[in-house]
Image (cartoon, rainbow, N blue to C red; front, side, top):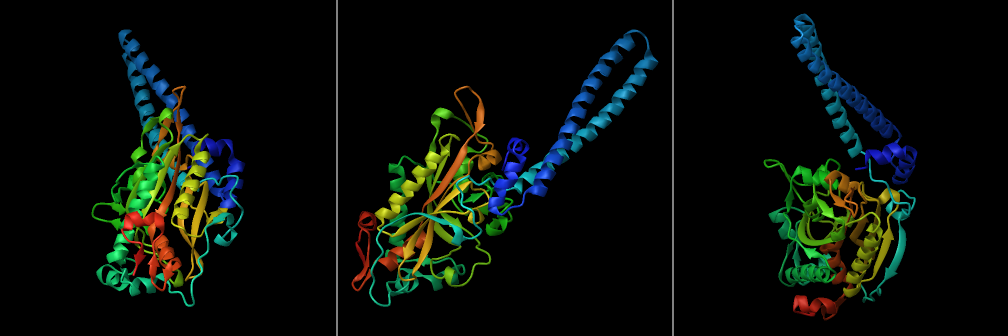
Length: 423
């Protein structure tokens, strides 16, 4: 969440920048400042009263020594009343602090100055394109038909076991999944990321720390009995490794990678865009997470974008990078680049990665700081990216590489699959 310092010192700038996300912050910023003023007033009054109680308490002892019992008793009563007033002031402060936190949680992160103006995905800006568009024969098959033809994925069996959006991978389809996971993890390790294996469930504090709660609880699967949430991405548990932690500046940037299954309710999703692997409730993904200093975080972001580009290049997929406009960005992001690969049979672009800098927005919720050379503590910047999400990568690989003989496997993947052709 935004810090009070940023809001109080840059009120109009905060309002103007949030307008790029199509969020009118005028009313809530005024409420934040009013609540903070009430909190400060209560704090000042409490500090004054505590000082007065301290002085009165000292005077009581002196009056007793002088034998002035009536005056001492009157002062005791004054101290008792002051303590009652202090208890109310403390309650008022706690209430104001609670309300302040609730208000701050409702305010999105500020978009970076380079974020394009726009409301919808159509307004995103294409930064870069690469790869070669495949030339397929007549009537190419979409991946859900290829999956059935080659017995790779059983969507109907998944419906029987769990419901729509939970496919069962079989044979070479299962081996392709495992190959991609290992391929992505090995590449991340070679790029300097430390692999971790996180839990697939998190508590509410972890969801709050990375911004999924209280904003997106309706999109997460909740285990009611234990009050735990199935993770929508490994970003959540991995970033929360550093909740309530102070790291040394010399250790930054911190680079982690993790494979996990991801669980998303995707409430309200329907139509052609959700067919096959296009949108699932459970899917596999390898994530990369970084912690860095504010001065270096945008260099880290560019390095992450370049790294994801290297992956889609190795997979020989046609790709494009989009700089997201204000209206298409997430609640917590300051700047996001989406990667899309082209699906030849569907004749559409499929998002396979989002790479984002959250600046200090998550870190303020996580209370994640670093100690600089002057021994002062500052909030880190957090970044993350998909590297990569498997379903749409698999969809594009199957569709783009179909031939009369079978489905070709990109050369970089062959050592991992153990076969170069699905047939």
